[in-house]
Image (cartoon, rainbow, N blue to C red; front, side, top):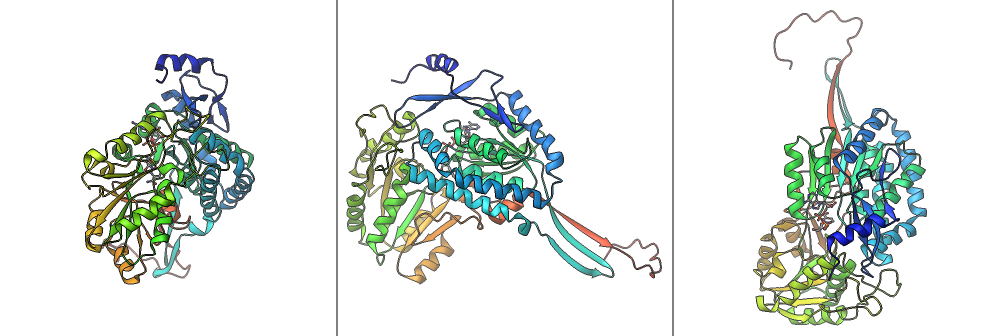
Length: 512
Ligand code: NAD
Protein backbone atom coordinates (compact mmCIF):
# COMPACT_ATOMS: atom_id res chain seq x y z
CA UNK A 1 0.00 0.00 0.00
CA UNK A 2 1.44 3.45 -0.85
CA UNK A 3 1.73 5.85 2.11
CA UNK A 4 -1.19 8.31 2.42
CA UNK A 5 -0.74 11.64 0.57
CA UNK A 6 -0.56 13.59 3.85
CA UNK A 7 2.32 11.41 5.05
CA UNK A 8 4.19 12.00 1.77
CA UNK A 9 3.72 15.76 2.15
CA UNK A 10 5.20 15.79 5.65
CA UNK A 11 8.05 13.58 4.55
CA UNK A 12 8.77 15.98 1.69
CA UNK A 13 8.82 19.05 3.97
CA UNK A 14 11.67 17.41 5.91
CA UNK A 15 13.67 16.30 2.88
CA UNK A 16 16.87 18.19 2.31
CA UNK A 17 17.53 17.02 -1.25
CA UNK A 18 15.49 19.25 -3.56
CA UNK A 19 15.31 19.82 -7.30
CA UNK A 20 14.84 23.58 -7.62
CA UNK A 21 13.54 25.71 -10.47
CA UNK A 22 16.11 27.46 -12.70
CA UNK A 23 15.21 31.08 -13.24
CA UNK A 24 17.35 33.95 -14.58
CA UNK A 25 20.50 31.83 -14.88
CA UNK A 26 20.53 30.29 -11.42
CA UNK A 27 18.70 27.83 -9.16
CA UNK A 28 15.53 29.26 -7.62
CA UNK A 29 14.27 27.62 -4.44
CA UNK A 30 10.56 27.24 -3.90
CA UNK A 31 8.84 30.35 -2.61
CA UNK A 32 5.47 28.61 -2.40
CA UNK A 33 6.67 25.66 -0.30
CA UNK A 34 4.92 23.13 -2.53
CA UNK A 35 6.78 19.99 -3.53
CA UNK A 36 6.24 16.65 -5.22
CA UNK A 37 8.10 13.36 -4.68
CA UNK A 38 10.71 11.97 -7.07
CA UNK A 39 11.01 8.20 -6.90
CA UNK A 40 13.68 5.71 -7.94
CA UNK A 41 11.56 3.25 -9.96
CA UNK A 42 13.99 0.39 -9.26
CA UNK A 43 13.60 0.61 -5.49
CA UNK A 44 10.27 2.39 -5.16
CA UNK A 45 11.91 4.81 -2.66
CA UNK A 46 11.32 8.57 -2.70
CA UNK A 47 14.85 9.90 -3.26
CA UNK A 48 14.29 13.62 -3.51
CA UNK A 49 11.59 16.26 -3.74
CA UNK A 50 10.93 18.62 -6.60
CA UNK A 51 9.57 22.15 -6.22
CA UNK A 52 6.10 22.67 -7.74
CA UNK A 53 5.71 26.14 -9.21
CA UNK A 54 2.91 28.46 -8.20
CA UNK A 55 1.47 31.05 -10.58
CA UNK A 56 3.86 33.65 -9.11
CA UNK A 57 6.88 31.42 -9.69
CA UNK A 58 5.88 30.81 -13.32
CA UNK A 59 5.42 34.56 -13.72
CA UNK A 60 8.95 35.12 -12.37
CA UNK A 61 10.37 32.70 -14.96
CA UNK A 62 8.43 34.32 -17.81
CA UNK A 63 9.54 37.78 -16.62
CA UNK A 64 13.20 36.65 -16.61
CA UNK A 65 12.76 35.24 -20.13
CA UNK A 66 11.08 38.43 -21.33
CA UNK A 67 13.86 40.60 -19.95
CA UNK A 68 16.51 38.38 -21.56
CA UNK A 69 14.69 38.48 -24.90
CA UNK A 70 15.32 42.23 -25.18
CA UNK A 71 18.99 41.50 -25.88
CA UNK A 72 18.98 37.82 -26.96
CA UNK A 73 16.44 38.57 -29.69
CA UNK A 74 18.95 41.11 -31.08
CA UNK A 75 22.05 38.91 -30.67
CA UNK A 76 24.09 37.96 -33.71
CA UNK A 77 23.86 34.51 -35.24
CA UNK A 78 27.56 34.03 -34.50
CA UNK A 79 27.00 34.79 -30.81
CA UNK A 80 24.17 32.27 -30.58
CA UNK A 81 25.93 29.49 -32.45
CA UNK A 82 29.23 29.89 -30.62
CA UNK A 83 27.35 29.33 -27.33
CA UNK A 84 25.56 26.32 -28.82
CA UNK A 85 28.87 24.83 -30.01
CA UNK A 86 30.24 25.17 -26.46
CA UNK A 87 27.02 23.63 -25.09
CA UNK A 88 27.41 20.73 -27.52
CA UNK A 89 30.94 20.03 -26.26
CA UNK A 90 29.78 20.14 -22.63
CA UNK A 91 26.84 17.87 -23.39
CA UNK A 92 29.19 15.41 -25.01
CA UNK A 93 31.53 15.51 -22.01
CA UNK A 94 28.65 15.01 -19.53
CA UNK A 95 26.77 12.25 -21.40
CA UNK A 96 27.34 9.69 -18.68
CA UNK A 97 26.33 11.98 -15.84
CA UNK A 98 23.09 12.95 -17.60
CA UNK A 99 22.36 9.31 -18.38
CA UNK A 100 22.85 8.43 -14.71
CA UNK A 101 20.36 11.11 -13.67
CA UNK A 102 17.87 9.72 -16.18
CA UNK A 103 18.28 6.14 -14.98
CA UNK A 104 17.92 7.15 -11.32
CA UNK A 105 14.56 8.86 -11.88
CA UNK A 106 13.12 7.22 -15.01
CA UNK A 107 14.50 3.70 -14.52
CA UNK A 108 15.62 3.01 -18.11
CA UNK A 109 18.92 1.16 -18.51
CA UNK A 110 22.09 3.22 -18.80
CA UNK A 111 22.79 2.35 -22.46
CA UNK A 112 19.26 3.43 -23.38
CA UNK A 113 19.68 6.68 -21.44
CA UNK A 114 22.94 7.32 -23.32
CA UNK A 115 21.05 6.78 -26.59
CA UNK A 116 18.52 9.38 -25.53
CA UNK A 117 21.27 11.93 -24.86
CA UNK A 118 22.81 11.15 -28.28
CA UNK A 119 19.50 11.76 -30.07
CA UNK A 120 19.08 15.06 -28.22
CA UNK A 121 22.59 16.06 -29.18
CA UNK A 122 21.61 15.62 -32.84
CA UNK A 123 19.22 18.54 -32.49
CA UNK A 124 21.93 20.66 -30.87
CA UNK A 125 24.05 19.88 -33.96
CA UNK A 126 21.23 21.18 -36.11
CA UNK A 127 20.86 24.31 -33.99
CA UNK A 128 24.62 24.99 -34.32
CA UNK A 129 23.98 25.42 -38.05
CA UNK A 130 20.95 27.69 -37.65
CA UNK A 131 22.68 30.40 -39.70
CA UNK A 132 22.11 28.27 -42.82
CA UNK A 133 18.45 27.67 -42.01
CA UNK A 134 17.74 31.34 -41.30
CA UNK A 135 19.27 32.61 -44.54
CA UNK A 136 15.94 33.83 -45.90
CA UNK A 137 15.06 34.41 -49.56
CA UNK A 138 15.65 37.34 -51.89
CA UNK A 139 14.13 38.13 -55.29
CA UNK A 140 15.72 41.01 -57.12
CA UNK A 141 14.08 43.27 -59.69
CA UNK A 142 10.53 41.96 -59.23
CA UNK A 143 9.55 45.32 -60.71
CA UNK A 144 11.67 48.20 -61.84
CA UNK A 145 14.24 48.74 -59.04
CA UNK A 146 12.13 46.67 -56.61
CA UNK A 147 13.55 43.79 -54.54
CA UNK A 148 11.61 41.46 -52.23
CA UNK A 149 13.14 39.68 -49.21
CA UNK A 150 11.52 37.03 -47.04
CA UNK A 151 13.04 36.97 -43.58
CA UNK A 152 12.20 35.08 -40.40
CA UNK A 153 12.26 36.61 -36.93
CA UNK A 154 11.95 35.13 -33.42
CA UNK A 155 8.65 35.11 -31.54
CA UNK A 156 9.78 36.17 -28.06
CA UNK A 157 9.23 34.00 -24.98
CA UNK A 158 8.29 30.42 -25.87
CA UNK A 159 7.42 27.51 -23.56
CA UNK A 160 8.01 23.77 -23.68
CA UNK A 161 6.08 21.15 -21.69
CA UNK A 162 7.60 17.68 -21.77
CA UNK A 163 6.79 14.07 -20.77
CA UNK A 164 8.55 11.69 -18.39
CA UNK A 165 9.76 9.16 -20.93
CA UNK A 166 12.60 11.20 -22.47
CA UNK A 167 13.59 13.72 -19.78
CA UNK A 168 16.64 14.96 -21.73
CA UNK A 169 15.89 14.24 -25.40
CA UNK A 170 12.41 15.76 -25.69
CA UNK A 171 13.43 19.10 -24.09
CA UNK A 172 16.31 19.06 -26.59
CA UNK A 173 13.83 18.58 -29.44
CA UNK A 174 12.67 22.07 -28.48
CA UNK A 175 15.00 24.53 -26.77
CA UNK A 176 18.15 24.31 -28.96
CA UNK A 177 16.11 25.30 -32.02
CA UNK A 178 14.08 27.87 -30.10
CA UNK A 179 17.04 29.73 -28.64
CA UNK A 180 19.10 29.41 -31.84
CA UNK A 181 16.25 31.23 -33.59
CA UNK A 182 16.57 34.07 -31.05
CA UNK A 183 13.74 33.22 -28.64
CA UNK A 184 14.00 32.79 -24.90
CA UNK A 185 12.61 29.64 -23.31
CA UNK A 186 10.68 28.41 -20.27
CA UNK A 187 10.69 24.62 -19.85
CA UNK A 188 8.18 22.73 -17.68
CA UNK A 189 9.62 19.22 -17.62
CA UNK A 190 7.90 16.14 -16.24
CA UNK A 191 7.67 16.29 -12.46
CA UNK A 192 8.49 12.57 -12.35
CA UNK A 193 12.12 12.91 -13.54
CA UNK A 194 13.08 16.60 -13.32
CA UNK A 195 16.87 16.47 -12.66
CA UNK A 196 18.13 16.06 -16.23
CA UNK A 197 16.55 19.35 -17.31
CA UNK A 198 18.30 21.23 -14.50
CA UNK A 199 21.61 19.66 -15.52
CA UNK A 200 21.00 20.91 -19.08
CA UNK A 201 20.36 24.40 -17.66
CA UNK A 202 23.66 24.28 -15.76
CA UNK A 203 25.54 23.27 -18.91
CA UNK A 204 23.90 26.04 -20.92
CA UNK A 205 25.01 28.56 -18.27
CA UNK A 206 28.54 27.11 -18.34
CA UNK A 207 28.51 27.48 -22.13
CA UNK A 208 27.92 31.21 -21.66
CA UNK A 209 24.18 31.49 -22.33
CA UNK A 210 23.02 34.84 -20.93
CA UNK A 211 20.86 34.67 -17.81
CA UNK A 212 17.16 34.27 -18.46
CA UNK A 213 17.43 32.84 -21.98
CA UNK A 214 16.68 29.33 -20.66
CA UNK A 215 14.54 28.79 -17.57
CA UNK A 216 13.03 25.72 -15.93
CA UNK A 217 9.90 25.65 -13.78
CA UNK A 218 8.84 22.33 -12.31
CA UNK A 219 5.37 21.34 -11.32
CA UNK A 220 1.98 20.13 -12.41
CA UNK A 221 -1.20 21.51 -13.96
CA UNK A 222 -0.89 24.79 -12.01
CA UNK A 223 2.39 25.62 -13.75
CA UNK A 224 1.20 24.37 -17.16
CA UNK A 225 -2.05 26.32 -17.04
CA UNK A 226 -0.22 29.52 -16.16
CA UNK A 227 2.11 29.09 -19.14
CA UNK A 228 -0.91 28.47 -21.38
CA UNK A 229 -2.60 31.68 -20.37
CA UNK A 230 0.37 34.00 -19.75
CA UNK A 231 0.16 36.90 -22.22
CA UNK A 232 3.95 37.06 -22.64
CA UNK A 233 4.25 33.43 -23.79
CA UNK A 234 4.02 33.52 -27.57
CA UNK A 235 4.22 29.82 -28.44
CA UNK A 236 3.87 26.45 -26.71
CA UNK A 237 5.53 23.17 -27.69
CA UNK A 238 4.07 20.14 -25.94
CA UNK A 239 4.91 16.44 -26.00
CA UNK A 240 2.88 13.98 -23.91
CA UNK A 241 -0.29 11.90 -23.89
CA UNK A 242 -3.15 12.48 -26.33
CA UNK A 243 -5.78 13.79 -23.86
CA UNK A 244 -3.35 16.38 -22.47
CA UNK A 245 -2.05 17.25 -25.97
CA UNK A 246 -5.61 17.95 -27.09
CA UNK A 247 -6.18 20.13 -24.00
CA UNK A 248 -2.92 22.04 -24.52
CA UNK A 249 -3.74 22.66 -28.18
CA UNK A 250 -7.23 23.92 -27.47
CA UNK A 251 -6.27 26.07 -24.48
CA UNK A 252 -3.11 27.60 -25.94
CA UNK A 253 -4.87 28.36 -29.24
CA UNK A 254 -7.82 29.92 -27.37
CA UNK A 255 -5.27 32.19 -25.71
CA UNK A 256 -3.91 33.26 -29.08
CA UNK A 257 -0.69 31.27 -28.98
CA UNK A 258 1.07 29.31 -31.66
CA UNK A 259 1.00 25.66 -30.53
CA UNK A 260 2.34 22.26 -31.52
CA UNK A 261 1.13 19.41 -29.29
CA UNK A 262 2.46 15.91 -29.90
CA UNK A 263 0.37 13.15 -28.36
CA UNK A 264 0.34 9.42 -27.74
CA UNK A 265 0.61 6.50 -30.12
CA UNK A 266 -0.17 2.95 -31.07
CA UNK A 267 2.55 2.06 -33.53
CA UNK A 268 1.97 -0.85 -35.88
CA UNK A 269 4.39 -3.12 -37.68
CA UNK A 270 2.93 -4.84 -40.73
CA UNK A 271 4.74 -8.08 -41.54
CA UNK A 272 4.11 -9.42 -45.05
CA UNK A 273 4.41 -13.14 -45.83
CA UNK A 274 7.63 -12.61 -47.83
CA UNK A 275 9.47 -10.86 -44.95
CA UNK A 276 12.56 -12.26 -43.30
CA UNK A 277 10.76 -13.48 -40.17
CA UNK A 278 13.90 -13.65 -38.03
CA UNK A 279 14.72 -10.03 -38.83
CA UNK A 280 11.09 -9.06 -38.22
CA UNK A 281 11.02 -10.86 -34.86
CA UNK A 282 14.31 -9.23 -33.78
CA UNK A 283 12.92 -5.82 -34.74
CA UNK A 284 9.55 -6.39 -33.07
CA UNK A 285 11.13 -7.47 -29.77
CA UNK A 286 13.66 -4.60 -29.73
CA UNK A 287 11.03 -2.00 -30.60
CA UNK A 288 8.29 -3.33 -28.32
CA UNK A 289 10.23 -3.99 -25.13
CA UNK A 290 13.09 -1.43 -25.32
CA UNK A 291 12.73 1.14 -22.53
CA UNK A 292 10.01 -1.18 -21.12
CA UNK A 293 7.69 -0.06 -23.91
CA UNK A 294 7.67 3.51 -22.56
CA UNK A 295 8.55 5.07 -25.93
CA UNK A 296 6.13 7.02 -28.10
CA UNK A 297 7.63 5.20 -31.09
CA UNK A 298 7.53 1.73 -29.48
CA UNK A 299 5.95 -0.96 -31.64
CA UNK A 300 2.90 -2.03 -29.68
CA UNK A 301 0.97 -3.90 -32.39
CA UNK A 302 2.36 -6.40 -34.90
CA UNK A 303 0.02 -7.23 -37.79
CA UNK A 304 0.92 -10.59 -39.33
CA UNK A 305 -0.37 -10.94 -42.90
CA UNK A 306 -1.32 -14.34 -44.35
CA UNK A 307 -0.24 -17.63 -42.81
CA UNK A 308 2.94 -16.47 -41.03
CA UNK A 309 1.24 -15.60 -37.70
CA UNK A 310 2.04 -18.74 -35.68
CA UNK A 311 5.67 -18.89 -36.82
CA UNK A 312 6.21 -15.16 -36.18
CA UNK A 313 4.65 -15.32 -32.71
CA UNK A 314 6.87 -18.26 -31.80
CA UNK A 315 9.99 -16.39 -32.95
CA UNK A 316 8.95 -13.32 -30.94
CA UNK A 317 8.24 -15.44 -27.86
CA UNK A 318 11.64 -17.19 -28.00
CA UNK A 319 13.45 -13.86 -28.11
CA UNK A 320 11.25 -11.97 -25.63
CA UNK A 321 11.61 -14.66 -22.94
CA UNK A 322 15.36 -14.06 -22.84
CA UNK A 323 15.19 -10.33 -22.04
CA UNK A 324 17.03 -9.60 -18.81
CA UNK A 325 15.06 -7.30 -16.53
CA UNK A 326 16.73 -5.46 -13.65
CA UNK A 327 17.83 -2.10 -12.26
CA UNK A 328 18.91 0.37 -14.94
CA UNK A 329 22.34 0.89 -13.36
CA UNK A 330 23.18 -2.84 -13.61
CA UNK A 331 25.08 -3.29 -16.91
CA UNK A 332 23.52 -6.77 -17.27
CA UNK A 333 19.97 -5.35 -17.40
CA UNK A 334 18.33 -4.91 -20.80
CA UNK A 335 15.02 -3.55 -19.50
CA UNK A 336 14.27 -1.57 -16.35
CA UNK A 337 11.14 -0.92 -14.26
CA UNK A 338 8.14 1.26 -15.13
CA UNK A 339 7.93 4.88 -14.04
CA UNK A 340 5.41 4.54 -11.15
CA UNK A 341 3.60 1.82 -9.24
CA UNK A 342 0.27 3.16 -10.47
CA UNK A 343 1.43 2.94 -14.08
CA UNK A 344 2.77 -0.58 -13.49
CA UNK A 345 -0.62 -1.65 -12.11
CA UNK A 346 -2.45 -0.07 -15.06
CA UNK A 347 -0.21 -1.86 -17.57
CA UNK A 348 -0.75 -5.14 -15.70
CA UNK A 349 -4.54 -4.69 -15.84
CA UNK A 350 -4.45 -4.86 -19.66
CA UNK A 351 -2.69 -8.23 -19.46
CA UNK A 352 -4.93 -9.70 -16.77
CA UNK A 353 -8.04 -8.57 -18.65
CA UNK A 354 -6.82 -9.71 -22.09
CA UNK A 355 -8.03 -13.32 -22.12
CA UNK A 356 -11.58 -12.32 -21.12
CA UNK A 357 -11.62 -9.95 -24.12
CA UNK A 358 -10.56 -12.66 -26.56
CA UNK A 359 -6.74 -12.51 -26.73
CA UNK A 360 -4.44 -15.49 -26.32
CA UNK A 361 -1.92 -14.70 -23.57
CA UNK A 362 1.39 -16.14 -24.80
CA UNK A 363 3.59 -14.46 -22.15
CA UNK A 364 2.22 -12.95 -18.94
CA UNK A 365 4.62 -10.52 -17.25
CA UNK A 366 2.38 -9.62 -14.33
CA UNK A 367 3.59 -10.55 -10.86
CA UNK A 368 7.24 -10.31 -11.90
CA UNK A 369 9.75 -8.93 -9.41
CA UNK A 370 13.53 -8.58 -9.01
CA UNK A 371 15.22 -10.11 -6.01
CA UNK A 372 16.50 -7.47 -3.61
CA UNK A 373 14.33 -4.81 -5.28
CA UNK A 374 10.89 -6.06 -4.31
CA UNK A 375 9.42 -2.54 -3.95
CA UNK A 376 10.46 -1.50 -7.48
CA UNK A 377 7.88 -0.88 -10.20
CA UNK A 378 8.51 -4.17 -11.98
CA UNK A 379 6.59 -5.92 -14.66
CA UNK A 380 7.82 -8.67 -16.94
CA UNK A 381 7.37 -9.22 -20.66
CA UNK A 382 3.84 -9.79 -21.98
CA UNK A 383 2.90 -11.07 -25.43
CA UNK A 384 -0.73 -11.24 -26.54
CA UNK A 385 -1.76 -13.05 -29.72
CA UNK A 386 -4.89 -12.92 -31.90
CA UNK A 387 -5.83 -9.69 -30.18
CA UNK A 388 -9.33 -8.52 -31.19
CA UNK A 389 -9.28 -4.96 -32.60
CA UNK A 390 -12.16 -4.05 -30.28
CA UNK A 391 -10.31 -5.07 -27.10
CA UNK A 392 -8.82 -2.58 -24.65
CA UNK A 393 -5.30 -3.97 -25.10
CA UNK A 394 -5.41 -2.98 -28.77
CA UNK A 395 -7.42 0.24 -28.59
CA UNK A 396 -5.52 1.96 -25.77
CA UNK A 397 -1.94 3.12 -25.64
CA UNK A 398 -0.64 0.80 -22.89
CA UNK A 399 2.87 2.33 -22.68
CA UNK A 400 4.47 -0.77 -21.16
CA UNK A 401 6.17 -4.01 -22.23
CA UNK A 402 3.05 -5.54 -23.77
CA UNK A 403 3.10 -6.50 -27.45
CA UNK A 404 -0.19 -7.26 -29.23
CA UNK A 405 -0.16 -9.46 -32.33
CA UNK A 406 -3.11 -9.23 -34.72
CA UNK A 407 -3.78 -11.32 -37.79
CA UNK A 408 -4.80 -9.99 -41.22
CA UNK A 409 -5.61 -12.10 -44.26
CA UNK A 410 -4.28 -9.66 -46.85
CA UNK A 411 -2.09 -6.57 -47.21
CA UNK A 412 -5.24 -4.49 -47.76
CA UNK A 413 -6.83 -5.82 -44.55
CA UNK A 414 -3.67 -4.94 -42.63
CA UNK A 415 -3.50 -1.40 -44.01
CA UNK A 416 -7.23 -0.87 -43.34
CA UNK A 417 -6.73 -1.97 -39.73
CA UNK A 418 -3.80 0.41 -39.21
CA UNK A 419 -5.55 3.33 -40.90
CA UNK A 420 -8.57 2.74 -38.68
CA UNK A 421 -6.53 3.52 -35.56
CA UNK A 422 -7.11 7.00 -34.16
CA UNK A 423 -3.34 7.31 -33.67
CA UNK A 424 -0.90 7.97 -36.51
CA UNK A 425 2.57 8.43 -35.05
CA UNK A 426 5.00 5.85 -36.47
CA UNK A 427 4.41 2.67 -38.44
CA UNK A 428 6.59 0.10 -40.17
CA UNK A 429 6.38 -2.52 -42.88
CA UNK A 430 8.59 -5.61 -43.07
CA UNK A 431 8.84 -7.10 -46.54
CA UNK A 432 11.25 -7.97 -49.37
CA UNK A 433 8.80 -6.55 -51.93
CA UNK A 434 9.77 -3.00 -52.94
CA UNK A 435 6.46 -2.43 -54.71
CA UNK A 436 4.46 -3.32 -51.61
CA UNK A 437 6.70 -1.12 -49.47
CA UNK A 438 6.23 1.79 -51.84
CA UNK A 439 2.44 1.33 -51.82
CA UNK A 440 2.54 1.23 -48.03
CA UNK A 441 4.45 4.49 -47.72
CA UNK A 442 1.87 6.19 -49.96
CA UNK A 443 -1.28 4.67 -48.42
CA UNK A 444 -0.55 4.57 -44.71
CA UNK A 445 -1.95 7.32 -42.49
CA UNK A 446 0.93 8.06 -40.16
CA UNK A 447 3.54 10.78 -39.87
CA UNK A 448 6.63 8.54 -39.78
CA UNK A 449 7.06 5.35 -41.79
CA UNK A 450 9.76 2.69 -41.56
CA UNK A 451 10.54 0.21 -44.33
CA UNK A 452 12.27 -2.69 -42.56
CA UNK A 453 13.02 -0.10 -39.83
CA UNK A 454 10.86 -0.62 -36.72
CA UNK A 455 11.37 2.76 -34.97
CA UNK A 456 11.62 5.36 -37.73
CA UNK A 457 12.51 8.38 -35.56
CA UNK A 458 13.69 10.96 -38.11
CA UNK A 459 17.25 12.27 -37.89
CA UNK A 460 17.57 15.84 -36.62
CA UNK A 461 17.43 17.51 -40.02
CA UNK A 462 14.08 15.88 -40.89
CA UNK A 463 11.13 16.79 -38.70
CA UNK A 464 9.40 14.46 -36.19
CA UNK A 465 5.64 14.24 -35.85
CA UNK A 466 2.56 12.11 -36.21
CA UNK A 467 -0.87 12.40 -37.78
CA UNK A 468 -4.40 12.23 -36.35
CA UNK A 469 -4.54 11.97 -32.53
CA UNK A 470 -0.74 11.84 -32.35
CA UNK A 471 -0.28 15.54 -33.16
CA UNK A 472 -2.42 18.64 -32.75
CA UNK A 473 -1.24 21.70 -34.65
CA UNK A 474 0.37 21.90 -38.06
CA UNK A 475 4.08 21.89 -37.31
CA UNK A 476 6.13 18.80 -36.65
CA UNK A 477 9.01 19.22 -34.23
CA UNK A 478 12.71 20.03 -34.99
CA UNK A 479 14.16 20.01 -38.56
CA UNK A 480 12.79 22.65 -40.94
CA UNK A 481 9.43 22.60 -39.14
CA UNK A 482 11.25 23.53 -35.92
CA UNK A 483 12.77 26.62 -37.53
CA UNK A 484 9.38 27.60 -38.90
CA UNK A 485 7.59 27.01 -35.62
CA UNK A 486 10.01 29.17 -33.64
CA UNK A 487 10.08 32.07 -36.12
CA UNK A 488 7.55 34.15 -37.99
CA UNK A 489 7.86 35.30 -41.53
CA UNK A 490 8.17 38.84 -42.75
CA UNK A 491 8.34 39.97 -46.37
CA UNK A 492 10.15 43.23 -47.14
CA UNK A 493 9.51 44.94 -50.48
CA UNK A 494 12.13 47.60 -51.27
CA UNK A 495 12.45 50.25 -53.94
CA UNK A 496 15.61 52.35 -54.14
CA UNK A 497 15.08 54.76 -56.98
CA UNK A 498 17.97 55.64 -59.17
CA UNK A 499 19.01 59.28 -58.54
CA UNK A 500 18.36 59.88 -62.22
CA UNK A 501 14.70 58.69 -62.03
CA UNK A 502 11.96 61.20 -62.52
CA UNK A 503 9.22 61.21 -59.80
CA UNK A 504 6.54 58.58 -60.61
CA UNK A 505 3.60 60.81 -59.71
CA UNK A 506 0.39 59.79 -57.94
CA UNK A 507 -1.33 56.56 -59.11
CA UNK A 508 -4.44 55.28 -57.26
CA UNK A 509 -4.44 51.93 -59.09
CA UNK A 510 -3.66 48.71 -57.18
CA UNK A 511 0.12 48.05 -57.45
CA UNK A 512 0.85 45.43 -60.15
P1 NAD B 1 1.45 13.38 -19.78
O1 NAD B 1 0.57 13.85 -20.85
O2 NAD B 1 0.84 12.79 -18.56
O3 NAD B 1 2.39 14.58 -19.25
C1 NAD B 1 3.11 15.40 -20.14
C2 NAD B 1 3.31 16.76 -19.50
O4 NAD B 1 2.03 17.36 -19.28
C3 NAD B 1 4.03 16.71 -18.16
O5 NAD B 1 4.93 17.79 -18.07
C4 NAD B 1 2.88 16.85 -17.15
O6 NAD B 1 3.29 17.48 -15.95
C5 NAD B 1 1.88 17.70 -17.89
N1 NAD B 1 0.49 17.40 -17.51
C6 NAD B 1 -0.01 16.21 -17.11
N2 NAD B 1 -1.32 16.32 -16.84
C7 NAD B 1 -1.67 17.59 -17.09
C8 NAD B 1 -2.91 18.31 -17.01
N3 NAD B 1 -4.04 17.73 -16.63
N4 NAD B 1 -2.91 19.62 -17.35
C9 NAD B 1 -1.77 20.23 -17.75
N5 NAD B 1 -0.57 19.59 -17.83
C10 NAD B 1 -0.52 18.29 -17.52
O7 NAD B 1 2.49 12.35 -20.45
P2 NAD B 1 3.56 11.43 -19.73
O8 NAD B 1 2.87 10.33 -19.01
O9 NAD B 1 4.55 12.26 -19.00
O10 NAD B 1 4.32 10.84 -21.01
C11 NAD B 1 3.89 9.72 -21.72
C12 NAD B 1 3.04 10.09 -22.90
O11 NAD B 1 3.75 10.96 -23.77
C13 NAD B 1 2.66 8.90 -23.77
O12 NAD B 1 1.33 9.03 -24.15
C14 NAD B 1 3.59 9.02 -24.97
O13 NAD B 1 3.11 8.41 -26.15
C15 NAD B 1 3.66 10.49 -25.12
N6 NAD B 1 4.83 10.88 -25.88
C16 NAD B 1 4.63 11.30 -27.16
C17 NAD B 1 5.72 11.63 -27.93
C18 NAD B 1 5.54 12.08 -29.35
O14 NAD B 1 6.51 12.52 -29.93
N7 NAD B 1 4.37 12.02 -29.93
C19 NAD B 1 7.03 11.57 -27.39
C20 NAD B 1 7.18 11.16 -26.06
C21 NAD B 1 6.06 10.82 -25.31
